[in-house]
Image (cartoon, rainbow over all chains, first blue to last red):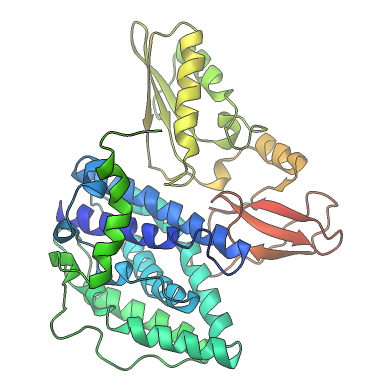
Length: 233
Length: 166
């Protein structure tokens, strides 16, 4: 169940990160938008993790090394531009991937066919914000560029092979690069030119190796469940 | 459902379908198009197939509980509500009557033709449910629930929810 765990953890972890914006988003509409996107991702995560086992057990009682999400989705929210850059990189990838999965015969085809329609809205949201920030003020342009640059090195991992995900990852990467390049250029920004992964980091998240901030995120996400086993409301 | 329902199943379908949506109580589950089928599995045992609007929609748990209650009140001892994903729900599954009720309730109904399909935003006009003007603007793609967008009417200046296409 490597594939369900990888895709489920991507959705779960990004959902939690987006949920951290609740009460902090720059405007009310964004508060609501980010929470809605988080909710879509949480729904996808619940279904994917249920392919593997008990969703609560998997979400709340696994150790950091047992999570199989890409490192991109665990990166801290940073400023709003960082969150939007993370959304752009991930939602374009997820949209293209789920389109492929939906067209296939695999066990995720039904879920992907449903989720791809939700993700299309996430992608549109991210793209519209990149255009607005990139082609906005000098300050928003600079921050958007800085965010794209900072997260670029986590994008290579999106195209590492995952057992059970039967898609042409080279074609996926080409499609992703073309789509991201198009948005970035329309936003008067520059596509980052550095490597898409650290020399030591290729596929790391998928192997259970995570970045420093992930442990703190998990502590917050899991502490209630671990402190009060079996609690409900 | 591909199989034909028996008269009893049709009756139970009608009962389950008449349950109001927990978040949009002007609509019934039948009008929302989320009820996929009702099957009598044996004496006093009924399985209901329900499909979620959005994968993460929390209303589906309330829907399941409401359906169970209604069918139990009707004398069915054992009710099992199962979630089905395929074919994926689309706003085209909302009935004409459902659309009319949404507009009457102040929510612009979804336009025909399902979903964004791609990242290109739809450009057809959305009519203001208050004054009927087609001169409306998007404020946010996401509103009070995942299934709605927030818009404003340029003519009467009222903000309103739009049940966005999926």
